[in-house]
Length: 463
Image (cartoon, rainbow, N blue to C red; front, side, top):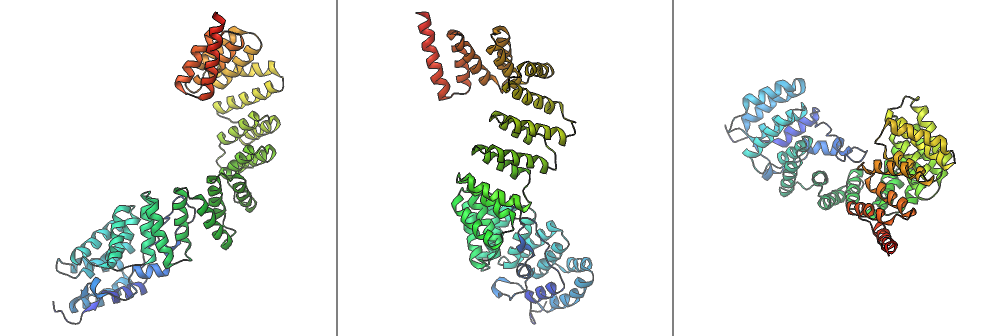
């Protein structure tokens, strides 16, 4: 081939871009954030990907006259039949041909969503022309699409080394670090990207993601505050700022954010349950009940575990009417078609309310019905043990305590409650081994202090 009349690859890129050969959107680059990275669809980024800008001769291969003629023939094919253009290039490429041909073929494979073949031909182009800047860049982008982030990062860093300093490149490198959980490096890269495009939200969201992972909650609050000012109707910004407030233990401010989202009509069951928990911790039980109630109504999956948990919390706090109201709501939502475990849990919670209201006979019948159906229901076993213990039926109390102690999830709690029952009956020596066993399995300072006191009482009783 003659070396005259060289034809730059940048011109080929211009033509390909004009014909609509653009890289498809690569999807979410911030999987834990609801917002997709929109810059994948940014015309500036697409144009740079497809080489609409000027060529740097030291980092771009040249095309000789014969290859120019090939491209003159190829361009109409690209427009009319990209598949045929691929076949033409495959026939024309040889070990001696310009890296530009391999690069163009790789771009066509990207356009047809055949990313593995695109990777092969970008690498062949780089093998022929190691300093091929845009081949390194495009290869890095495609490797991200294939979730090969470590390889992608290397190609993108090489792009920078070859002079391809660009905000999008830094942003992509930040994303690769983020996926690798290298949050400090990711934040540094995103900040470099933001220097090039300070108003681009993608980079700010990337920075925020890194700050949350590094527990830089104060900075997150400030950053999301700026974003909220620009777009106050974006529920995600309010929610992310709420998470940062929780990280700072400023739950009241988090609750304010959740309420804003609630009034937008964009609060899902998870948000409303979190809001209910905040109100519970603040002792505002009426507001907590309303949040839990709305959460159960908003849950499209109709899960029973969250509202059952909420009812349990309210009942434990002495909010019996609110707890019962949630239980009634669960029955209504499920049309009384409950799984057996859920049915028994509701009965258990109702029995706890009955006990608290002095309806003991009714409650005990319910609890005994529960343990007959489910002998492994530790909560009901302990309620029965407590009831019989308070009513001086030591034999039945001992039986239910011992049954609860056989259950891994209840062993420690049951042994401590059993020991307290024995101490109340002045049976200190019997209480000591139970407390020691509980302390050995789950050491706690409060239990140790109680054990020390019981040991002393046991010794005094022997004197």
